[in-house]
Image (tube, rainbow, N blue to C red):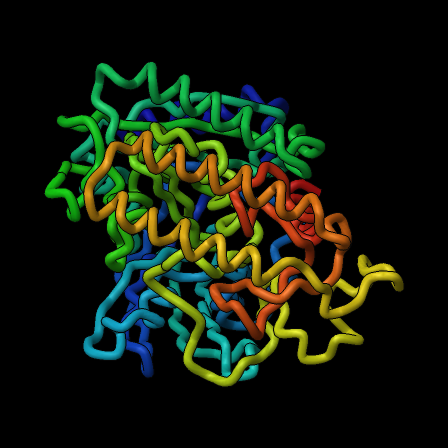
Length: 471
């Protein structure tokens, strides 16, 4: 398998043009544990991945201030900052659940960066009560240490890893945003179906602005390994499947929430393709997905709403976009501390209306806060959510749920079409899972309803990340 990875590295280099020296990729796997009140970290392993570092050498330092966490890599001898990235975590979502008030759990995470030439100090930062980054944990990493794992990994040997499929290739990985579509739940007989669906979803992503205008800045790869039985686990209905990535439904008790809690399995497969971002495509027909900034996103690739879910969840993973909806039930929620300005780019606590974070896009004619048909929307949504709950409780066919979503979206679009500020950038109350206290930039957005476009503020946030990886 390692020889195959070496051949892949050479093939990628030759296909991209003149070969230039790039460092290997180092991955630090850690455990992030605790409960609603405390957290701690521990080193699990250090892995030298088989492919060269795919990131943009022009932007090793992350100045975006995005993520619930960030990590910094500094030269252990001189203290020089070599690399940093913001990210968010599954642990961070779990600790807002009721379970986190009653017990402790541990979750796997990975921090990837260019292989250094000498020992480095790796520091993980979290957010304090004012949403400022503060150091939480640090560890010295020696890339030459004997316990750095190199070559094939035991988990990857469980599954026959093939060559990734180049869905879109526009240049060397170091010059482009590299997106990996990682399939799970596909049998050997379904590999062609996986590739076809991967191509379809890539086309969907690049039909939505600003991805549409920036398509040339992306490479898209697809990789899947065959599993013995079609589909992924959905424990709430008694379905359990062997999984290559660990992805499944019912995370934190939410029937539609799909994540993997087996970070090791997911990373040991993903390392055989160049990637900055990963969308796990699960072979499932039931509506669902999930997205963690800087980690991964997921989509039920067989569902009627896959196009919307794919782009929405990728918005979380790629640009740290917050959910703007607040009427649908979720398994996690806002943290239990006084409201402060969120770090996410598309929601605000509006603590100072005169200095809203997207003020440059607000015209003088737009009032802040911005009125909208909030009561009518909420009255309608109460009925929709009751019907949605009943459909799941009665285990009705998925087609009925899909029809309900279409009915809902038609009603919302008709309601919003009559709103005075339907096209304005302002501050519309309701977002971030809260009916009050948080505001979103525009009346409608792909992060609010099942519409097909990002608002102007979300588009700008996405462009910032594209630039970080391709300019």
